Length: 438
Image (cartoon, rainbow, N blue to C red; front, side, top):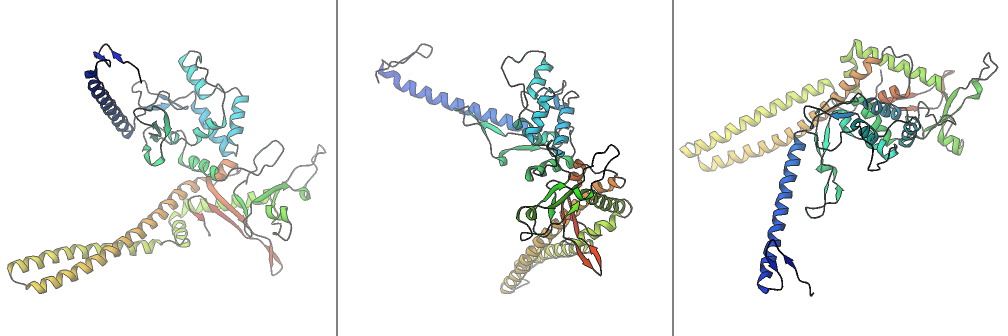
Protein backbone atom coordinates (compact mmCIF):
# COMPACT_ATOMS: atom_id res chain seq x y z
CA UNK A 1 0.00 0.00 0.00
CA UNK A 2 3.08 2.24 -0.04
CA UNK A 3 2.97 2.86 3.74
CA UNK A 4 6.09 2.76 5.89
CA UNK A 5 5.75 1.74 9.54
CA UNK A 6 8.42 2.77 12.05
CA UNK A 7 8.41 1.81 15.76
CA UNK A 8 11.39 3.34 17.51
CA UNK A 9 10.97 1.49 20.80
CA UNK A 10 10.74 -1.89 19.09
CA UNK A 11 13.39 -1.12 16.49
CA UNK A 12 11.01 -1.83 13.61
CA UNK A 13 11.15 -0.25 10.16
CA UNK A 14 9.18 -1.93 7.39
CA UNK A 15 11.49 -0.54 4.75
CA UNK A 16 13.79 -3.37 5.77
CA UNK A 17 12.30 -6.67 4.64
CA UNK A 18 13.72 -8.66 7.54
CA UNK A 19 11.48 -6.73 9.97
CA UNK A 20 8.18 -8.01 8.53
CA UNK A 21 8.19 -11.30 10.42
CA UNK A 22 9.13 -9.49 13.65
CA UNK A 23 6.13 -7.15 13.28
CA UNK A 24 3.76 -10.05 12.64
CA UNK A 25 5.12 -11.99 15.61
CA UNK A 26 4.84 -9.01 17.97
CA UNK A 27 1.27 -8.31 16.84
CA UNK A 28 0.31 -11.91 17.57
CA UNK A 29 1.97 -11.84 20.99
CA UNK A 30 0.34 -8.51 21.89
CA UNK A 31 -3.05 -9.87 20.89
CA UNK A 32 -2.57 -13.01 22.99
CA UNK A 33 -1.46 -10.87 25.95
CA UNK A 34 -4.55 -8.64 25.66
CA UNK A 35 -6.83 -11.68 25.43
CA UNK A 36 -5.19 -13.35 28.44
CA UNK A 37 -5.39 -10.15 30.53
CA UNK A 38 -9.06 -9.70 29.61
CA UNK A 39 -9.88 -13.28 30.62
CA UNK A 40 -8.15 -12.86 33.98
CA UNK A 41 -9.96 -9.59 34.72
CA UNK A 42 -13.29 -11.17 33.77
CA UNK A 43 -12.60 -14.18 36.03
CA UNK A 44 -11.76 -11.92 38.99
CA UNK A 45 -14.92 -9.84 38.49
CA UNK A 46 -17.17 -12.89 38.24
CA UNK A 47 -15.56 -14.38 41.32
CA UNK A 48 -16.35 -11.13 43.15
CA UNK A 49 -19.94 -11.23 41.84
CA UNK A 50 -20.42 -14.78 43.16
CA UNK A 51 -19.38 -13.76 46.66
CA UNK A 52 -22.18 -11.18 46.71
CA UNK A 53 -19.89 -8.16 46.82
CA UNK A 54 -21.16 -5.03 45.13
CA UNK A 55 -19.08 -3.91 42.15
CA UNK A 56 -20.12 -0.56 40.73
CA UNK A 57 -19.18 3.09 40.61
CA UNK A 58 -22.41 4.29 42.20
CA UNK A 59 -24.57 2.67 44.86
CA UNK A 60 -28.25 2.25 43.83
CA UNK A 61 -30.49 5.03 45.10
CA UNK A 62 -31.72 4.08 48.56
CA UNK A 63 -28.34 2.63 49.50
CA UNK A 64 -24.81 3.85 50.06
CA UNK A 65 -21.48 2.07 50.15
CA UNK A 66 -20.36 1.10 53.62
CA UNK A 67 -17.41 3.20 54.86
CA UNK A 68 -15.84 0.00 56.24
CA UNK A 69 -16.14 -1.95 52.95
CA UNK A 70 -17.08 -0.34 49.65
CA UNK A 71 -18.35 -3.72 48.39
CA UNK A 72 -21.13 -3.79 51.00
CA UNK A 73 -24.35 -1.77 50.69
CA UNK A 74 -26.16 -0.16 53.61
CA UNK A 75 -29.43 1.76 53.69
CA UNK A 76 -29.08 5.49 53.01
CA UNK A 77 -31.43 7.40 55.36
CA UNK A 78 -31.60 10.30 52.88
CA UNK A 79 -32.64 8.47 49.72
CA UNK A 80 -34.35 5.35 51.13
CA UNK A 81 -37.67 7.19 51.76
CA UNK A 82 -37.76 8.18 48.07
CA UNK A 83 -37.49 4.53 47.00
CA UNK A 84 -40.16 3.47 49.49
CA UNK A 85 -42.45 6.19 48.20
CA UNK A 86 -41.94 5.05 44.59
CA UNK A 87 -42.99 1.51 45.54
CA UNK A 88 -45.99 2.87 47.44
CA UNK A 89 -47.07 5.07 44.50
CA UNK A 90 -46.81 2.08 42.20
CA UNK A 91 -48.98 0.04 44.56
CA UNK A 92 -51.53 2.83 44.40
CA UNK A 93 -51.71 2.17 40.66
CA UNK A 94 -49.65 5.12 39.39
CA UNK A 95 -47.85 4.56 36.09
CA UNK A 96 -44.08 4.91 35.72
CA UNK A 97 -44.56 8.21 33.93
CA UNK A 98 -46.94 9.61 36.55
CA UNK A 99 -44.51 8.71 39.34
CA UNK A 100 -41.67 10.47 37.51
CA UNK A 101 -43.84 13.50 36.81
CA UNK A 102 -44.92 13.76 40.45
CA UNK A 103 -41.33 13.57 41.70
CA UNK A 104 -40.24 16.24 39.21
CA UNK A 105 -43.11 18.53 40.16
CA UNK A 106 -42.19 18.22 43.83
CA UNK A 107 -38.54 18.98 43.11
CA UNK A 108 -37.22 15.63 44.32
CA UNK A 109 -33.63 15.21 43.05
CA UNK A 110 -32.95 12.41 40.59
CA UNK A 111 -30.61 9.53 41.56
CA UNK A 112 -27.68 11.31 39.94
CA UNK A 113 -28.72 14.55 41.63
CA UNK A 114 -28.61 12.86 45.04
CA UNK A 115 -25.16 11.50 44.19
CA UNK A 116 -23.68 14.91 43.40
CA UNK A 117 -25.34 16.41 46.48
CA UNK A 118 -23.67 13.76 48.66
CA UNK A 119 -20.35 14.39 46.94
CA UNK A 120 -20.72 18.14 47.43
CA UNK A 121 -19.78 18.99 43.86
CA UNK A 122 -21.67 20.21 40.80
CA UNK A 123 -22.90 18.01 37.97
CA UNK A 124 -20.28 18.99 35.40
CA UNK A 125 -21.05 16.05 33.12
CA UNK A 126 -24.45 17.45 32.29
CA UNK A 127 -26.35 14.34 33.38
CA UNK A 128 -30.11 14.89 33.51
CA UNK A 129 -31.36 16.21 36.87
CA UNK A 130 -34.92 14.98 36.19
CA UNK A 131 -36.79 11.77 36.79
CA UNK A 132 -38.18 9.77 33.84
CA UNK A 133 -40.25 6.64 33.39
CA UNK A 134 -37.22 4.47 32.56
CA UNK A 135 -35.49 5.40 35.83
CA UNK A 136 -38.63 4.61 37.83
CA UNK A 137 -39.11 1.29 36.02
CA UNK A 138 -35.49 0.32 36.66
CA UNK A 139 -35.88 0.97 40.39
CA UNK A 140 -39.11 -1.01 40.64
CA UNK A 141 -37.52 -4.01 38.91
CA UNK A 142 -34.19 -3.98 40.75
CA UNK A 143 -33.93 -6.91 43.16
CA UNK A 144 -31.31 -5.04 45.17
CA UNK A 145 -34.23 -3.62 47.17
CA UNK A 146 -35.11 -7.17 48.24
CA UNK A 147 -31.65 -7.55 49.73
CA UNK A 148 -30.34 -9.56 46.76
CA UNK A 149 -27.33 -8.76 44.60
CA UNK A 150 -27.86 -9.30 40.87
CA UNK A 151 -24.81 -8.45 38.76
CA UNK A 152 -23.10 -9.38 35.48
CA UNK A 153 -26.06 -7.94 33.58
CA UNK A 154 -23.86 -6.19 31.03
CA UNK A 155 -20.43 -6.71 29.50
CA UNK A 156 -18.23 -5.80 26.56
CA UNK A 157 -18.57 -7.36 23.12
CA UNK A 158 -15.01 -8.72 23.30
CA UNK A 159 -11.58 -7.80 24.58
CA UNK A 160 -11.13 -5.78 21.39
CA UNK A 161 -14.56 -4.11 21.23
CA UNK A 162 -15.37 -2.37 24.52
CA UNK A 163 -18.97 -1.48 23.67
CA UNK A 164 -21.31 -2.37 26.58
CA UNK A 165 -24.11 -4.79 25.73
CA UNK A 166 -26.85 -6.43 27.80
CA UNK A 167 -26.33 -10.09 28.70
CA UNK A 168 -29.06 -12.75 28.63
CA UNK A 169 -30.77 -13.37 31.96
CA UNK A 170 -29.25 -16.84 32.30
CA UNK A 171 -25.79 -15.20 32.50
CA UNK A 172 -26.75 -12.94 35.40
CA UNK A 173 -25.13 -13.74 38.75
CA UNK A 174 -27.55 -13.52 41.67
CA UNK A 175 -26.65 -13.84 45.34
CA UNK A 176 -29.49 -13.56 47.83
CA UNK A 177 -29.58 -11.87 51.24
CA UNK A 178 -26.37 -9.88 50.89
CA UNK A 179 -27.65 -6.74 52.60
CA UNK A 180 -30.66 -5.31 54.41
CA UNK A 181 -33.77 -5.13 52.17
CA UNK A 182 -35.75 -1.93 51.68
CA UNK A 183 -39.06 -3.58 50.73
CA UNK A 184 -40.73 -6.81 51.79
CA UNK A 185 -41.30 -9.78 49.51
CA UNK A 186 -45.06 -9.16 49.62
CA UNK A 187 -44.67 -5.58 48.41
CA UNK A 188 -42.23 -6.66 45.72
CA UNK A 189 -44.56 -9.39 44.42
CA UNK A 190 -47.51 -7.01 44.36
CA UNK A 191 -45.53 -4.44 42.36
CA UNK A 192 -44.31 -7.05 39.87
CA UNK A 193 -47.88 -8.28 39.33
CA UNK A 194 -48.83 -4.77 38.23
CA UNK A 195 -46.41 -5.12 35.31
CA UNK A 196 -48.57 -7.98 34.04
CA UNK A 197 -51.76 -5.99 34.64
CA UNK A 198 -51.09 -2.39 33.64
CA UNK A 199 -53.64 -0.04 35.19
CA UNK A 200 -56.46 0.93 32.86
CA UNK A 201 -59.57 1.87 34.81
CA UNK A 202 -59.57 5.42 36.15
CA UNK A 203 -62.33 6.74 38.37
CA UNK A 204 -62.15 10.51 38.01
CA UNK A 205 -60.87 13.25 35.76
CA UNK A 206 -57.89 13.71 38.07
CA UNK A 207 -56.56 10.31 36.96
CA UNK A 208 -56.99 8.52 40.31
CA UNK A 209 -56.85 4.74 39.93
CA UNK A 210 -60.02 3.04 41.15
CA UNK A 211 -59.68 0.68 44.11
CA UNK A 212 -60.44 -2.53 42.20
CA UNK A 213 -58.78 -1.66 38.88
CA UNK A 214 -57.17 -4.70 37.20
CA UNK A 215 -58.36 -7.19 39.84
CA UNK A 216 -62.15 -7.14 39.30
CA UNK A 217 -63.64 -9.24 36.48
CA UNK A 218 -66.95 -10.54 35.18
CA UNK A 219 -67.37 -14.20 36.09
CA UNK A 220 -69.43 -14.96 32.97
CA UNK A 221 -67.48 -13.39 30.10
CA UNK A 222 -64.11 -12.76 31.76
CA UNK A 223 -64.09 -9.07 30.87
CA UNK A 224 -62.82 -6.49 33.33
CA UNK A 225 -65.37 -4.55 35.35
CA UNK A 226 -65.78 -0.89 34.40
CA UNK A 227 -66.15 1.76 37.08
CA UNK A 228 -69.01 4.24 36.79
CA UNK A 229 -70.87 6.81 38.86
CA UNK A 230 -73.75 5.27 40.79
CA UNK A 231 -76.42 7.92 40.32
CA UNK A 232 -79.22 5.75 41.67
CA UNK A 233 -77.88 5.91 45.23
CA UNK A 234 -76.88 9.57 45.41
CA UNK A 235 -77.88 11.54 48.53
CA UNK A 236 -77.88 15.26 49.19
CA UNK A 237 -75.46 16.43 51.87
CA UNK A 238 -76.22 19.23 54.33
CA UNK A 239 -74.32 21.71 52.16
CA UNK A 240 -76.67 20.98 49.26
CA UNK A 241 -74.19 18.98 47.17
CA UNK A 242 -74.74 15.42 46.03
CA UNK A 243 -72.34 12.71 47.13
CA UNK A 244 -70.67 10.49 44.58
CA UNK A 245 -71.18 6.74 44.88
CA UNK A 246 -69.08 4.50 42.69
CA UNK A 247 -70.13 1.21 41.19
CA UNK A 248 -68.94 -1.34 38.65
CA UNK A 249 -70.47 -3.01 35.63
CA UNK A 250 -69.23 -5.47 33.03
CA UNK A 251 -67.05 -3.73 30.47
CA UNK A 252 -68.26 -5.96 27.63
CA UNK A 253 -71.87 -5.13 28.49
CA UNK A 254 -70.98 -1.43 28.52
CA UNK A 255 -69.44 -1.70 25.06
CA UNK A 256 -71.75 -4.17 23.34
CA UNK A 257 -75.01 -4.18 25.29
CA UNK A 258 -77.16 -7.14 26.39
CA UNK A 259 -76.13 -9.25 23.42
CA UNK A 260 -72.50 -9.25 24.60
CA UNK A 261 -73.15 -9.85 28.31
CA UNK A 262 -75.36 -8.75 31.21
CA UNK A 263 -74.69 -5.72 33.42
CA UNK A 264 -73.34 -7.43 36.58
CA UNK A 265 -73.90 -4.15 38.42
CA UNK A 266 -72.49 -3.89 41.96
CA UNK A 267 -71.92 -0.91 44.25
CA UNK A 268 -68.31 -0.26 45.25
CA UNK A 269 -69.15 0.10 48.94
CA UNK A 270 -71.03 -3.20 48.94
CA UNK A 271 -68.12 -4.96 47.28
CA UNK A 272 -65.66 -3.44 49.75
CA UNK A 273 -67.74 -4.57 52.74
CA UNK A 274 -68.03 -8.10 51.36
CA UNK A 275 -64.30 -8.28 50.78
CA UNK A 276 -63.54 -7.01 54.28
CA UNK A 277 -65.86 -9.65 55.76
CA UNK A 278 -64.11 -12.39 53.81
CA UNK A 279 -60.66 -11.13 54.84
CA UNK A 280 -61.73 -10.93 58.50
CA UNK A 281 -63.15 -14.48 58.44
CA UNK A 282 -60.02 -16.00 56.92
CA UNK A 283 -57.70 -13.94 59.12
CA UNK A 284 -59.47 -15.07 62.28
CA UNK A 285 -59.35 -18.69 61.13
CA UNK A 286 -55.65 -18.31 60.29
CA UNK A 287 -55.04 -17.07 63.84
CA UNK A 288 -57.18 -19.60 65.70
CA UNK A 289 -57.10 -22.73 63.51
CA UNK A 290 -54.29 -22.43 60.94
CA UNK A 291 -53.97 -26.22 60.52
CA UNK A 292 -57.67 -26.53 59.64
CA UNK A 293 -57.49 -23.71 57.10
CA UNK A 294 -54.29 -25.12 55.60
CA UNK A 295 -55.73 -28.62 55.23
CA UNK A 296 -58.94 -27.24 53.72
CA UNK A 297 -57.03 -25.19 51.18
CA UNK A 298 -54.74 -28.07 50.17
CA UNK A 299 -57.67 -30.44 49.87
CA UNK A 300 -59.62 -27.90 47.82
CA UNK A 301 -56.84 -27.50 45.31
CA UNK A 302 -56.03 -30.33 42.96
CA UNK A 303 -53.00 -31.23 45.02
CA UNK A 304 -52.22 -33.88 47.60
CA UNK A 305 -53.83 -33.36 50.98
CA UNK A 306 -51.88 -33.77 54.19
CA UNK A 307 -52.89 -37.44 54.42
CA UNK A 308 -51.85 -38.04 50.82
CA UNK A 309 -48.54 -36.35 51.50
CA UNK A 310 -47.89 -38.70 54.40
CA UNK A 311 -48.81 -41.66 52.19
CA UNK A 312 -46.40 -40.47 49.48
CA UNK A 313 -43.62 -40.10 52.03
CA UNK A 314 -44.30 -43.59 53.43
CA UNK A 315 -44.30 -45.12 49.93
CA UNK A 316 -41.07 -43.32 49.08
CA UNK A 317 -39.45 -44.72 52.22
CA UNK A 318 -40.49 -48.26 51.21
CA UNK A 319 -39.09 -47.76 47.71
CA UNK A 320 -35.76 -46.47 49.07
CA UNK A 321 -35.52 -49.44 51.41
CA UNK A 322 -36.16 -51.88 48.55
CA UNK A 323 -33.54 -50.17 46.37
CA UNK A 324 -30.96 -50.64 49.14
CA UNK A 325 -31.95 -54.32 49.43
CA UNK A 326 -31.58 -54.82 45.68
CA UNK A 327 -28.04 -53.44 45.80
CA UNK A 328 -27.14 -55.94 48.50
CA UNK A 329 -28.78 -58.79 46.55
CA UNK A 330 -26.79 -57.94 43.42
CA UNK A 331 -23.53 -57.94 45.40
CA UNK A 332 -24.42 -61.25 47.13
CA UNK A 333 -25.33 -62.95 43.84
CA UNK A 334 -22.07 -61.86 42.24
CA UNK A 335 -20.02 -63.09 45.22
CA UNK A 336 -21.81 -66.49 45.17
CA UNK A 337 -21.09 -66.78 41.46
CA UNK A 338 -17.38 -65.99 42.00
CA UNK A 339 -17.17 -68.53 44.86
CA UNK A 340 -18.82 -71.17 42.68
CA UNK A 341 -21.79 -71.51 44.98
CA UNK A 342 -24.21 -70.30 42.29
CA UNK A 343 -24.21 -71.36 38.63
CA UNK A 344 -23.44 -68.61 36.15
CA UNK A 345 -26.76 -69.02 34.30
CA UNK A 346 -28.72 -68.63 37.54
CA UNK A 347 -26.62 -65.60 38.51
CA UNK A 348 -27.32 -63.91 35.15
CA UNK A 349 -31.03 -64.65 35.53
CA UNK A 350 -31.14 -63.13 39.02
CA UNK A 351 -29.08 -60.13 37.93
CA UNK A 352 -31.54 -59.38 35.10
CA UNK A 353 -34.50 -59.73 37.45
CA UNK A 354 -32.93 -57.44 40.04
CA UNK A 355 -32.02 -54.88 37.39
CA UNK A 356 -35.58 -54.83 35.99
CA UNK A 357 -36.99 -54.35 39.48
CA UNK A 358 -34.41 -51.68 40.29
CA UNK A 359 -35.25 -49.77 37.08
CA UNK A 360 -38.95 -49.88 37.93
CA UNK A 361 -38.32 -48.70 41.50
CA UNK A 362 -36.15 -45.83 40.28
CA UNK A 363 -38.89 -44.70 37.91
CA UNK A 364 -41.46 -44.96 40.72
CA UNK A 365 -39.15 -42.98 42.99
CA UNK A 366 -38.84 -40.21 40.41
CA UNK A 367 -42.62 -39.94 40.14
CA UNK A 368 -43.08 -39.93 43.92
CA UNK A 369 -40.41 -37.26 44.35
CA UNK A 370 -42.07 -35.05 41.74
CA UNK A 371 -45.45 -35.41 43.46
CA UNK A 372 -43.94 -34.60 46.83
CA UNK A 373 -42.15 -31.53 45.47
CA UNK A 374 -45.41 -30.24 43.98
CA UNK A 375 -47.16 -30.86 47.28
CA UNK A 376 -44.42 -29.11 49.24
CA UNK A 377 -44.66 -26.08 46.92
CA UNK A 378 -48.40 -25.90 47.59
CA UNK A 379 -47.79 -26.24 51.32
CA UNK A 380 -45.12 -23.53 51.26
CA UNK A 381 -47.42 -21.15 49.36
CA UNK A 382 -50.22 -21.86 51.85
CA UNK A 383 -47.90 -21.22 54.80
CA UNK A 384 -46.84 -17.89 53.28
CA UNK A 385 -50.48 -16.90 52.75
CA UNK A 386 -51.39 -17.84 56.34
CA UNK A 387 -48.51 -15.73 57.64
CA UNK A 388 -49.77 -12.73 55.65
CA UNK A 389 -53.57 -13.00 56.06
CA UNK A 390 -53.49 -13.56 59.83
CA UNK A 391 -52.36 -9.95 60.40
CA UNK A 392 -55.55 -8.49 58.90
CA UNK A 393 -58.17 -9.69 61.37
CA UNK A 394 -58.76 -6.11 62.53
CA UNK A 395 -58.57 -4.45 59.11
CA UNK A 396 -61.05 -1.56 59.12
CA UNK A 397 -60.40 0.26 55.84
CA UNK A 398 -59.34 -1.26 52.55
CA UNK A 399 -56.87 0.70 50.45
CA UNK A 400 -55.26 -0.25 47.16
CA UNK A 401 -51.82 -1.33 48.51
CA UNK A 402 -53.51 -3.67 51.00
CA UNK A 403 -55.82 -5.02 48.30
CA UNK A 404 -52.92 -5.81 45.96
CA UNK A 405 -50.95 -7.34 48.80
CA UNK A 406 -53.75 -9.79 49.56
CA UNK A 407 -55.91 -10.29 46.47
CA UNK A 408 -55.01 -11.41 42.98
CA UNK A 409 -58.45 -11.49 41.33
CA UNK A 410 -62.15 -11.01 42.12
CA UNK A 411 -64.94 -12.43 39.96
CA UNK A 412 -68.58 -11.39 40.23
CA UNK A 413 -71.54 -13.27 38.76
CA UNK A 414 -74.94 -11.95 37.76
CA UNK A 415 -77.83 -11.92 40.23
CA UNK A 416 -80.21 -14.86 40.28
CA UNK A 417 -83.19 -15.90 42.40
CA UNK A 418 -83.79 -19.03 44.43
CA UNK A 419 -87.16 -19.41 46.19
CA UNK A 420 -87.83 -15.70 45.81
CA UNK A 421 -84.46 -14.66 47.27
CA UNK A 422 -81.78 -12.84 45.29
CA UNK A 423 -78.35 -14.47 45.21
CA UNK A 424 -75.02 -13.63 43.60
CA UNK A 425 -71.72 -15.52 43.37
CA UNK A 426 -68.55 -13.59 44.16
CA UNK A 427 -65.22 -15.40 44.15
CA UNK A 428 -62.09 -13.90 45.72
CA UNK A 429 -58.75 -15.30 44.57
CA UNK A 430 -55.98 -14.58 47.06
CA UNK A 431 -52.27 -14.31 46.33
CA UNK A 432 -50.32 -17.54 46.92
CA UNK A 433 -53.37 -19.80 47.20
CA UNK A 434 -56.13 -18.67 44.86
CA UNK A 435 -59.79 -19.24 45.73
CA UNK A 436 -60.36 -20.47 49.30
CA UNK A 437 -63.85 -21.71 50.12
CA UNK A 438 -64.78 -22.00 53.78
